[in-house]
Amino acid sequence: MGYLLCKECGGIYELQEGESPDDFDVCYCGGEIEYHLSRDELYERQTYVPTAEETVKQKSSDRNLIIIIIIGVVFISVIPIAIAALFIYRAYFSGSGALILEQMAISATMIFLGGI
Image: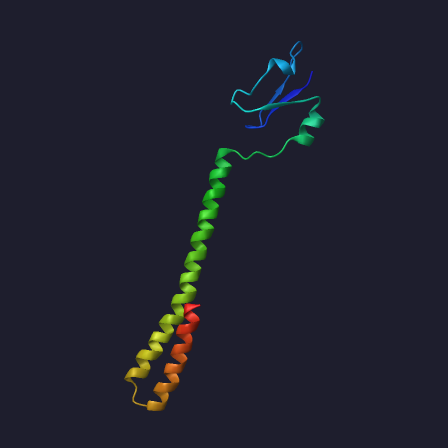
């Protein structure tokens, strides 16, 4: 006797007495089948085939990671720009000229760092 393993769906069929591997062309799912003499040989060669549900979960997980990265990049770039804008606003409405130049230099640096 022996075992048939579908390469497509991972299904396993144990050959019954009187059956031959040549009696089977393809799996019921349409996938290619391969013959194995024993259960030990079958499990040594068998590779993991994810189910459709696991594939969908993986794609969803990848999409969530991309969204988190995009949100992180937006916050990292927006916060320094907002702080720089506040410095510019404050410097514009304060009366000291030297303070204005100092604050504008800080603001320009923060805008540059926010754009990176």
